[in-house]
Length: 379
Image (cartoon, rainbow, N blue to C red; front, side, top):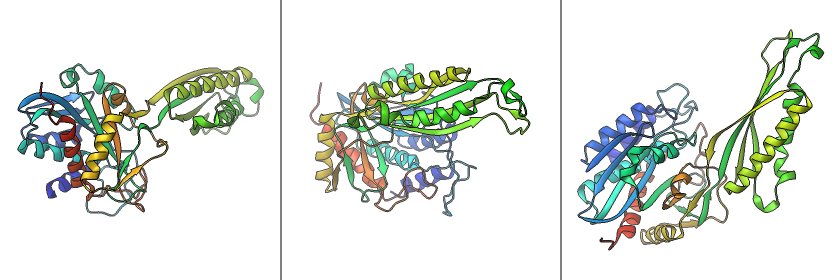
């Protein structure tokens, strides 16, 4: 497994943000070509790559997906493989996920599936919620339509190597909303001659933050997080003429997200009208909830038990979002967790680094699950 560790650490040194993963994709392509897949297609949904390994007989097609992108977070760790990209680093473990899925290439080169196909997808732009949908809508993807889709995510806070499972919704839905309030500047000594959005921005921050309390039910488990607000420019002689508020909406289901969004826009329209401002709204970074198929989840559970791994059954969905939900909305599949250590730094933290011990474990659990899914399926 030393070559997978080396791959992971080389990817960590040269991270790229969503939509800019050209060199990352190039490194993955060079690694995959050593194991002679039956087909490799590049440029899917951006810099995405699919490597195909065909079996001896026609059968079920299983796709395993990982992510190419890193985060705009500066590297703070003093490690040999520290990020060489200013302000960018792999703080979600996508470098480790890529190493795991790349490790499957060697296995299926040496041990092609008995029946069916295994497809390895290296997906761009997961962090912005755009990549999965772009891959699915890319005409190049049509020749890789799977019967099953699989993915994992490392999870700090759980024992190293523990498998985390949940039926139904595994990861929550989320949506970003950007409200732009347009008024009119004036001299700071004569603010009454302009239309400042300052009070509207302040009021909108409070109104958005209060939505879960006053506009959703207790069982709906919603969050509205204001992530950025801005008014005017740094000009002490000028009363501001425009401002922005950005917020993230979260819930376990898309229906509740739609309700939150409707209520947020309604509040913003009322606030803008109160202060005589023009309003524009833009929805961005849309993540559907990731729903696990019961059949696939049972197979993952069985495979993990056969491997002697500890299993944690999660009672409620995770609050974070994953664009793998676009895949599970179309195909039978599941996203499961792989414990990264109870005291490991959390995802997106500056001190986070993927535990290399998980690479071999991740490869092995995927192999077991794929064998179970494809077992005896001849057409």
